[in-house]
Image (tube, rainbow, N blue to C red; front, top):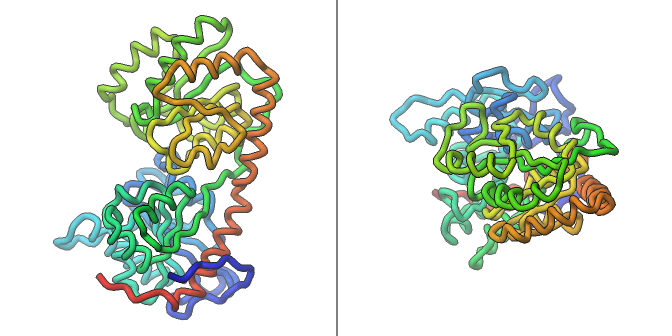
Length: 393
């Protein structure tokens, strides 16, 4: 397999893609068509983690496509709604056919598909003259058309694979897959974060989906142990079973509510992303006790960017994000989480030092830096696409 070498050279738009259109962007800027997963919506209050990242990383000649949101799409990035083609196909085939129509209209130089190997392979087949990249945000071993070694090897030959963390890359090449997989970490836009504050609120915060995989019950159990010992401190949880104000009441949530009430933990429910960032900017400690191996760990990165002290589990990609700037616990051992919280609550100096270290580490993921790395990666994919093997279904 060839490697996508990241270099400084600029390249003209690929002839087969057709460019971004006269008068829109300089002729040496690639026009990227970014394809959202079918469940993502590109609008405030509807966007999940992937849509928010796509908005944050979008370049000047980028078009985002996806199913129409309920509200108005984000105004700062060009968005084209996908109208599924109503033919006797599967739901994904209809979505791909709608994206293909957008490709013919936009005429990009590169198609970037997020988190859907099946969509990337289908577009590679119906748009054979265009480079296709696939950005993986989750464990590919659980994804359709990427579960087996043979499927991942084929996928690596057909499209340019990019992972958001070393952990995701490791999962893709596990069991002997020799594909070239580049890593482009997620980013943080410091220009939109709340300003750092000198005095933080005595709050221990959990932000994320309220499910067992995220360790929500472990957080409540630890708070039940420590809050009675620390007068003036409180604990809050922001989130629901899923993103959106219409998230359902699940059996897990129904069981968690009385436990949280007894522990003195306030459940604030789903909040817009801006409100979550405001809460992180005030809370002294943010806990990310995931049992599930986080493919990246965006909550931890956002918390560090907001200056909070972070306690995280050591699973998945979290250590790659947190590094040595945070504290690690086992989510299945509530006593260890309670001990860490005790130690931090009792030491303002330790919290200050950890918060500063976390903020400095978060700067490594600055969106300005990551956008430039992404631009160079796109240029190399287009430049070296002619060396890729032919797609075979």
